[in-house]
Amino acid sequence: MNSDDPKYQYDRFGKKGARVGQAVIDIMSNDQPDYTVEEILEGIAPEFTKEMEKTINENVGKFRSPFYVLVLTKKEAFADNVLHNWFIARQTAPFASKTMFEYPIHTKTLYIVNVERGDVKVCWSLPGIADCQAIAKNPANISQELVDWILNCFDGKLDKDNFEHLFK
Image: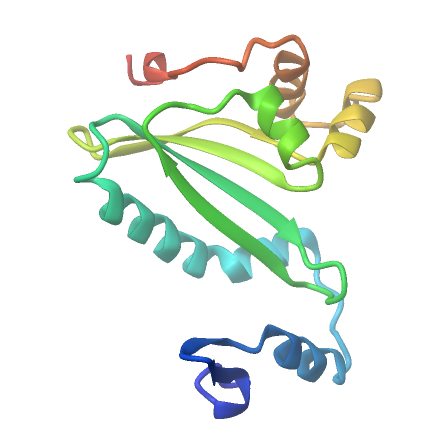
């Protein structure tokens, strides 16, 4: 599938865009291979990195360092093996508990960007609320860091305006 193909583009009323629905129909009309979560994440890693770098570069002059990038990730409900990412740059960190209720089905990952040091660090990452509740009830065999993030979110300990301590 070539995203430059005219059948995936539209120009209506002076507004240009992509026909995502047509792409999904075309993809779904073929057999979908079974991929593991790891294979899907490895497959999107180059595009994720490219988008993260673009978001950082576009916001270096807009925000003072350090600033934050909140990445919302959502699995496409009607297509296998398709994830969407949205990159949102901010000067201050959003409260984790607030993002949990604003984006209940998205995975939410907050990064802090220190331009002077050239560092990007993860502040926290939280799956959708239903997954968080399931993990909190049965944390066995789950990454302790993820369990801690979830419990700290529910306790309000991730509701901070900044995470600059991660660079010390």
